[in-house]
Every structure is written in structure tokens, then in C-alpha cells.
Amino acid sequence: MELIKTGNPRVEKLVQYLQILCTGICEKENYDSYRDILETATPFEVNKALSIVLAGATSFSDYMLPVSRFFRSVGKSLDSQIVAAYPPSHILSRLSAENTAIAALCSALQVLSKQVHLKTLNREVLVNFVASFGLLNSHYTALQNELFPLFEKATVDHACVKLMWSIQDLVLDAQKKIIQFDTSLSMDEFWKLFGKFFSLVEILVYRETRVLFPVAYRAISQEYEKENSLVKGVSLARFVSNTGSLAFGELEAIFKLLPLDIAFITADDKVAFYSDPPHRIFPRSPAVLKRLVQNCHPMKSVQTVEAILSSFKDGSKDSAEFYLTVQGRFIHIEYFAVKNNQGTYLGTLEVTQDATRLRALEGEKRL
Image (cartoon, rainbow, N blue to C red; front, side, top):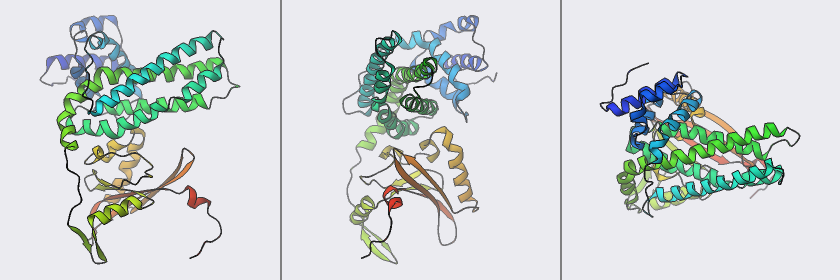
């Protein structure tokens, strides 16, 4: 076990305990040895320890169980902390309210599941209720595109959000499988899937309430106020090129009308610009600006993203193409290496289009 020096002996003890759990050892003697810190740990110390241990992770599947055990070990202390009321104008006020609503849905879901167990309700009622959990997707999207980018900018101790994102993906995948569950399969198989869904949702509710939100509130408040205080206006300057010129207001209006979502990633892999049309396919917020593009994707996609960027930088490729179906829509995504006249790599252009209508066209329609 590697000894981590942080300058904070309390955090170092938490790191040591979590590292023990990561080896698969979960004994009462270990808990007793660290009881003093486990039963007094603050959300900030817990987050710091998690960030240190998870910082170098490329896959989180091996960390799911030890981290869950770690949270159970520090639960007594976390539960004793007062949950803050966030200012109404703050992003955490909305996210906290959504989290409370999800917790209420979980309570209702637990009641329904007991009735299905007792056979006073059939399984379809439970499945339909799970299907109505639309708030999960919108809440997780807001976390990934609004809170996580702000958190990453404000503190180096943000590795926990990658684990949370991985769990969010598991929740949404389990929800989808419950909705599509083959009724010919046994109830034992159904309850196994349902139990996974329910427990993961509750895990996220707890970790958001007890660690992520209080830590993020302290970390991002200044950053959030700074970004929200920026005066948005149209520059009097013009964009000028060999093929013409446009006022920046005109250029912005054009970007909003293009049937494409465009994003530009700089040579050092940071998001510098994205268009914001009303038909945007994948959500974005200003918080994503200056964020490492690797952090804009779930862990399962990061390796592919890095491979594309590396191929653009070494010149082995100039483009990459992907296409997928999202909520019944055919989505086409292309990446292009952007270079200057001397061939120097400047960054990557991402172009995303809902090609559903175009794919269905037949014949001709001429001017």
C-alpha cells in the first residue's frame, strides 16, 4: 500500500483506510483502527481522500464496492452534518431540489415494489413508474454539463465526479432495461435488475446530498458568481476574411440557424467554443468552456476521444466519423483536424447533425 503524504494527517488516514478497502479487505479490526477519523470525517475530507485514490483510475468498476464500503464507514459522521440551504439563485438550489424530488420518487418506488412483492399490484405498474422517472436523465445531464465543469475549474479534488458519471450511466442503462424487460423472464431476474437500479439511484442521491453539493458549494461559489456576472453583448468589431466580412452579431445569428451543432476544441484539448442552436442535440452550458474535452465524456468514451485527438496531432488522420441512434433520431458526428496554412494543428472541430430527415429523403426537389 502506497503511503500518501497530503500534509493533512486526517486525510492521510482516510486515504489509508480506503486503500485497504480497495485490496478487498473489509474487517471490523480495520474499522476500529480508524474509528476516530471515520466517525468524525467531514464531507471535504471524504472528497479529498476519494479524489486522491481515484485520481489515476482509468476504469471505475473495481472501485464501486470499496467506495460504497468507504461511504458506509463514514456514514455516521456525514449523517450528522447539517445540510445547507443554498441561495435561490445558485445552481445548487435547483440541483438540490431535483435531488430531493428523486429521493421522494425512490420512497414511492419502494412502497410500490413492496406491493408487487405481496402481489397486490402487478409488475407492469412498477415498470411504468420506473419509466416515468424522466427527472433522472435531466438531472444527471445538468450535473454533467453544468455542475461538473464548474467543479473541475474550481478545485483539483474532482475525481469523484468521474465515478458519479459512471454510476449515472449504470442507472440509466438499468432503467432502460427495466422498461424493456422481457415479461417471459422470471421475477427473480426482474428483482435483481430492479434492485440494482434502486440501490444505485439511492447511492447517488446520498453522495450528492452529503458530499458533492456541500464541497462544490464552497469550491465554486466565486467561480459561479464570476461566470454569471459576465456581461453578454454583441461586439462592434467584425469578422473579416478573404471571402467577406460579417458583424459578430450576424455571425452569432448564423451559428444559431445552422442545422448543425458545432464545437471547437483547442490544441491543448480544451473546449473553446460551441454553437447554441435551439435544436441542440447534446446539452451544453457555458460552464463547459475551457474544460478538458476528456472530462466532457463518460469514462467509457475517453479512450476513443484521446485516440482521435492523438491521430489529429500526429497527422495520421484528419477526420473521424460516428453515427448512432438517440431517442429514435439518427445522429451523425464528425471530427476534423483544424490546421493553419503551414499545417500546424490548431485544434479539433466537432460537427453533430440530426440526419433523420435527410436519411429519409427520396427522389428530387429542385429549385
